[in-house]
Length: 357
Image 1 (cartoon, one colour):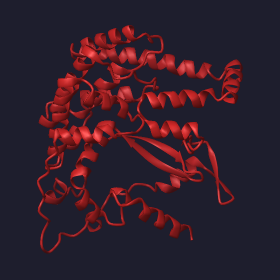
Image 2 (image 1 turned 180 degrees about the horizontal axis):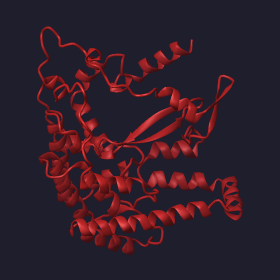
Image 3 (image 1 turned 90 degrees about the vertical axis):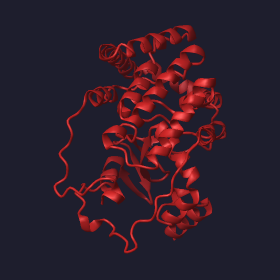
Image 4 (image 1 turned 120 degrees about the horizontal axis):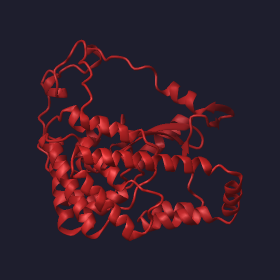
């Protein structure tokens, strides 16, 4: 068990660990109403933020700090204040937040209080947005096609050409559904919440018999894995995806990893070291718990609904870097059981077609 899974089997299960200071602060930030984040800053402010990011990633690898510290820092320093929009003022705001972060626990408490106030303002603003006058204005803008043009401009500026052109040509389908929404499939109407409950039966404690037996010839040899900063750069250039629990998305990560000179090179090196080490040994769960967290959403499959967990951008970057180096072994191990391991898309389409028949 320890060789295969990284920990001995505990018949009664381990008692839950008491929440540490970092986890309490991280969970406190996750409960706040989302208000968006600023674009990753450039110049001196951006380099300073990259250096702090690098040091916290190094702390995850060495055990000096858990992943909650990294994601909490990115959340609190980049959280958008609707009242602050000018570039100079935004840069000064991020600088002051970095100063507070470096003050330690007292400074983080100040940042959490500020984030709480911003969250309340964002929540009250969204509730006021339901007024009749705003609804009429939105209807007029929608008739003129303004929302699509705004989305197109934002995606193009962020470098997401495919999503931008899909919106402009009317090929963007689906979206996120709410629990109270309904959808129609094969002539029947379903509620999203009830469908998701049916897809997630009650959890059960796994028994030893449910685990695969040790092969007679023993476990296969673990091949040494080496991820380089060039691998991180190659993956980062094509990284896409929306925001996850911390609010830090792939566009911000791409800027941090590729656009800030020497600091970005050092960050790529640190990310490569973390990916290499995570591929060679089992990290304590408390060290990487926040890094593995997901934002759960219900996607409209037109028709149908699919539960999806959107992982942290840094986690996706590390995972894709590992898969880039282990592509052939990954496809061989997963086979047809996991089609997301890199098998050609034609195979997946054929399987879906047979299921429809």
